[in-house]
Length: 109
Length: 284
Image 1 (cartoon, chains in turn orange, purple):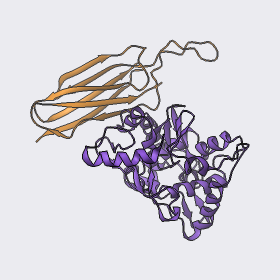
Image 2 (image 1 turned 180 degrees about the vertical axis):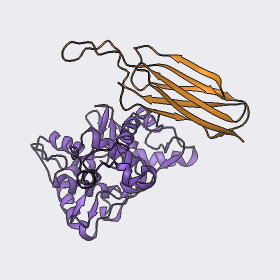
Image 3 (image 1 turned 90 degrees about the vertical axis):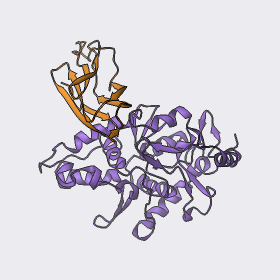
Image 4 (image 1 turned 180 degrees about the horizontal axis):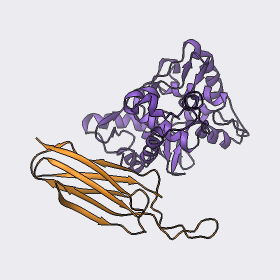
C-alpha cells in the first residue's frame, strides 16, 4: 500500500477565452518499481501510479501511461487551451486500485 | 572574489537594467506571487559587523539552485511539507487528538508563527524553538511520544508551519526574559571551537562572500530553515547545520536540541531580523 500520497495541482483561477494556460501537477508517491529487493532478498512488489488523466468539462485533455522507470513524485507540466469556464478534473490511478482525484475550477474574465 | 566590490557594481547595474533572473543581485519571488526580502538593513544590535545589509543565503547560491527555490513544483522541500500536512491531520497519542484538533487549518493558525521563533515561553520559563514547542504539544496535549530533534518527522512539521509565514519578516525578540539566552548565544557565536580554532564569525562574518575551498560562504542566516539540501536530498534543521559546522572545526559538538544550540539558534535568528522567512529553502 502506498502511504502519504498527496496530489498537488496549480491552475490559474481565470483566463480569457481561448487562452493557452500552463498546468502543473505533482503527486507525492514512492513509485516502487518492482525491481528492488528487501533485506531478506524478497522482491518488493511493484506499486506505482500507472495512469494520469486530465479532463476539462468531461473532455479529455491529456492521458498518460506510466511505467516502472518513472521517478518518485511524478511531476507533469502541460499546456491547455481554455474555450470556456469550467472544471479541470485530474485523476491518478494507483497499482493498488486507489484513485486520487483533484478538481480545479477556472473562470473566464 | 571580492564580494563587496561585486555588490557595489551589482547595485549600479540593477538601477539601469531590470532585475536579472538569478545571481547575487537577483530578486526572489516565489511562484510569481510571494516576494521575498533577500537583502535587508542590518539589525541595530549587530553594530555594523556585517556592514549595512544582511543577506539571505539564497543570494550566495548558483543560478540553478536559486531557480529551484522559485517554484514550489521545482522545490523538493515541498514534498516534505505535503507529508507533514498528512501527519498534521493524523490522530496520535492517548488523548485522541491530532494537530488539527486544536489548530485547525495551519494556513490560518500558523501564519506568522515561524517568524518569531525561537521565543520566550512564560509558563515554561525558557526560550523555546519551534521544534520544542511542537514536541511540547505532542507530549502534553496529545499524549504522544515526542519526535526526535531534527529528524524527519519534526523537521517536516517545522517546514509546514514555516511555509505559512513565507515572505513575512523574521522578528525574534532579544530583549526581556530572552536576553540572557541571547547573550549566551552571542558568546558562542564568537567562541573559537575545535582544533582549527574557528568561531562562527570567522567564516560567516569576516569572510562571507569569499570562497571556502569550492563553497561560496554566506552570512550563515537561518531564515530559510528547515532547508532542503542538494547534498543529502532531505530537509535539514538549523541545529544539524550548527553541528556540522562545529564538527568541521574538528571539535566535539553539542547535540541538536541542546540548550547551547537553542541559545545559538536564538542569536543567529536575531542576526536575520528583517529578512523574509523562506523555508523550505533550497541550498547546497
